[in-house]
Image (tube, rainbow, N blue to C red):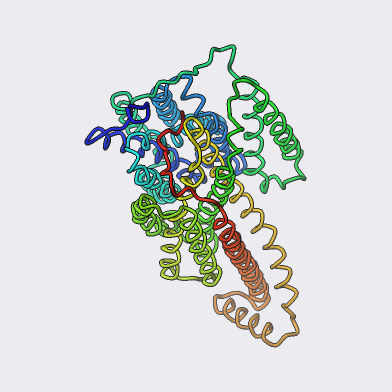
Amino acid sequence: MTQQESLVEYGGRRAIITITAILCALLEIVDTTIVNVALNEMRGNLGATLTEVAWVITAYAIGNVIIVPMTSWLSQQFGRRNYFAASIVIFTICSFLCGNATNIWELVFFRFLQGVGGGALLVTSQTIITESYPPEKRGMAQAIYGLGVIIGPTLGPPLGGYIVDNFSWPYIFYINIPIGVVATLLTLQFVRSPKFADKKSVHEIDWLGIALLALTVGSLQYVLERGQEDDWFNSNIIITLTIASVMGLFFFIWRELTYRNPIVELRVLKNGNLRVGTVFSFILGFGLYGSTFLIPLYTQSILGWTALQSGALMIPAALTTAFMMPIIGRLLQKGIPQQYLVALGMLIFFVYSFWGYKIITPDTGKDAFFWMLITRGAGLGLLFIPITTLSLSTLKGIEIGQGAAFTGMMRQLGGSFGVAAITTYISRQSMIHRNDLVSKLDTNNLAVQERVAQMQHFFMAKGKSANDALKAAYQALDLNVTKQATVLSYMDVFLYLGLMFLICVPIVLLVKGNRKKKVDLAEAMH
């Protein structure tokens, strides 16, 4: 009996381990988006500026991205069960400390530590779930894990909106505590660790590699999260951290390729399928987090919806993805090539994006979104598991865990790039569209004069003088132009996001699959 087979569980024990791991994955991912809707209340309560309170999101993301590539190595050092349990404990304690923070920088510091604890939960929970299932059921195991990863970002905003509306912002952190306590106890009781032969002594640990990794991804994450707000390369901090990120990456690659016991095994990227898979994981993260960010932003800023209404809009799409996951798991078990499913998912995501491009206006109704978002849910369902299995399909043993860490990190970075690119594009393109629209507003044009006169009469009917009513009419026209320009920018984003996925379809179909071998994902992290 191999090490992997000895970790297979059956019956109630497997069900408990699966629920525990999914709870942990959900905890981690929901916390990436749940705070978005509470930022205003935090700002008022803690006396912080908008720039300062945005660090609550940035710090968590930096902690996450730094730790994900190190999870395989850390599992070997401390034992998987111990490392997983310790991560849950760190996450849970930091949730309590976040809720109890008395100023903004305390909150930011504890959010960073919460991100460090949470980053480990994602990849390790994937491994634990997969190892608990026999080889013939591992496609289904990936489907179960995928539920948490895809649904998590969608659940955050409505859950956060409900808690903020009915309680107060600390409860978005306190809600983690009972779940964390239960998950820790279940982990210690039921999760088993594989035996690792290559535990390193303190002197052999790649401390320089850890420092360079933290510098590289921490700096990059800061640049992506804060670039637009700090006006990109007009900010000395952004310039400095961009240089630090580039130099850090160069020396990190050099260190990991030359050191005997690297913290991240880069040689695994020699595998062609993994290289392609990490690129597609990046694109998946770009689309998943980008669209999860884009739709609530549009509905709240343009249509004037509440956070709860915007979040609730995404629930049918999440349920569609949940419905798709077991079906995809079965299709993979029957031997359907992963690249065909990925190509179909990319095509469906293009349809969703083009649909969004066609329907959004300054006053689109709620019903118009329903089938569009159902399409999004179906597309994402077809992407997550096949991309993961395609990435890892030609790896063996310990390489699988190293590959899983790369795909996880690239998905997170893709999301950060997506959100940064979308916010920057909307901000810049809105000005271009506005200037274009204003250039077409000729005051000598009869239609423009009639429109201004109508609005002037409207304001005069409200009791304003003719002069004040005319000023108010021009202000209202200016606001309409700005709103229309912003909507045109959102349309552009939907169109270009869709085209990015469409371009990838033929590339995916050129990738070689591994039809004969069923993917042994359960060896992940060894």
